[in-house]
Amino acid sequence: MECCCTVNIDTYDGGTTLEHDIWIAIALGRGKCYECSRPINVGEPYCREYHEWVDGYYDEDDERPTNGIEKQLIYTCDDCYSLRQVFFSSGWYYGMLWESMQEFIRDCGGELSVPCILQLTKAARDKVLDMVEEEWGEVELCPECGELMENRWSGTRCSNKDCNY
Image 1: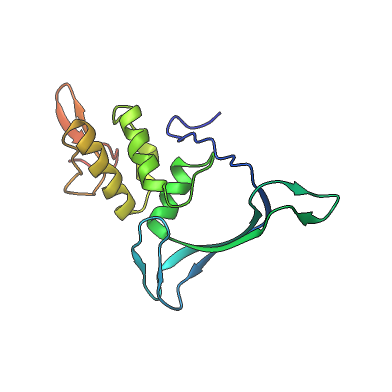
Image 2: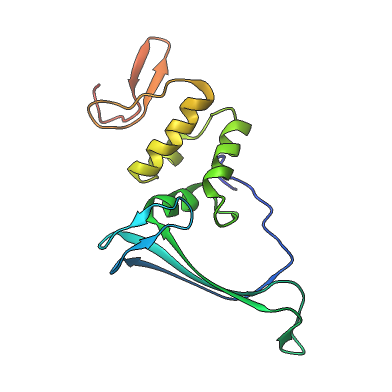
């Protein structure tokens, strides 16, 4: 069963993937995130993906594509990669991650699973919470531990059971 916070996107575009390799690495040189355009600095973790696919029909018996082979090397920063891992397990379109997340937040009225949000990196969590705030109002983080604050009938309290705030 899928998590209630999985963004479902139909990603079939008619092409055929020939090769897809993915590495989690530490940046040795500067790069740029394909999703958010943020610079990936030396020493930062990032996701590196190599794609090779045929845009259109591919006849496996002929062993040659009927259209040209497309190749692409994609860099994704740790923040965008964490969003992808948590919310986009069923697929995504490269370069549309945050736009798809904004649409998902609108569609669900800003109601996201707290455990899912807490799996994100701090920067990704902050960006998602900004989107949620935009959708339905204030979202608070605990000043003690940085976890989400929950509104209860008796007042606001920290969602972290180990925090006494």
